[in-house]
Length: 322
Image (cartoon, rainbow, N blue to C red; front, side):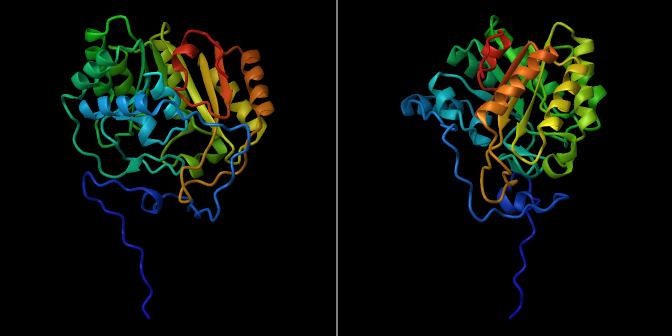
């Protein structure tokens, strides 16, 4: 009997690749997990109010928008949606990268929706939000990596919600950093966030296509251009890093003038994603929090369910959220 071959992932524009198809061509092969690990007692997800969750989803669909809360399968979606907050994901829901920890689909993205900045701004005003996080998929297909689209979204949002506080969670603009920085400094957010995601030794495994020093440079150079804007970064733990490696990342971020940091437990979205190595204890998260404040971070959010955008408004206001 002839051996069955795995079909090649589709290269057709607009086709979403997930699971095995998504991670088929990354440098370090992902071995499917046979049995998903049982979550410890200290990881409890708040489901939230189903009616409010449905209402927020309907508003997003009505404005043809995506939320990273849904696309990345965030464990806090019930809690955040129930409070009427969301992190908006612009430039579509197909990413040009294949990061094996992330649940966002990979593929050839569709062209940008030119009316998306207006739709986003109207949705934010409709929801009467005071603090909003705007993030995106990686768009390596665009000459500026999507920097101008971020600017357009910020501009339209401030027109309709002049008192709003805006945080952007941006990609690394691989190969286009200078161009992206030139564009972004013209319409800066109140908080600029860019995640390192993990320690340098795990980049090839966790964040293929990215560069640790490039991400640090993005944060430092933007801060140098716009010192009044808070900078922020985050990492996941539980994927094979050591405590000392995490603390070295924290030192590197402070050396690059980053103001705030988030540290959260990696939770494996499916058997075909990057394998979870261990659950980090609340005591270790507290140790990271204490160390962060010793280093001089303005705010440290460190805990099992902490994510980049979780209680971002409180963190930006200086409230402890761990």
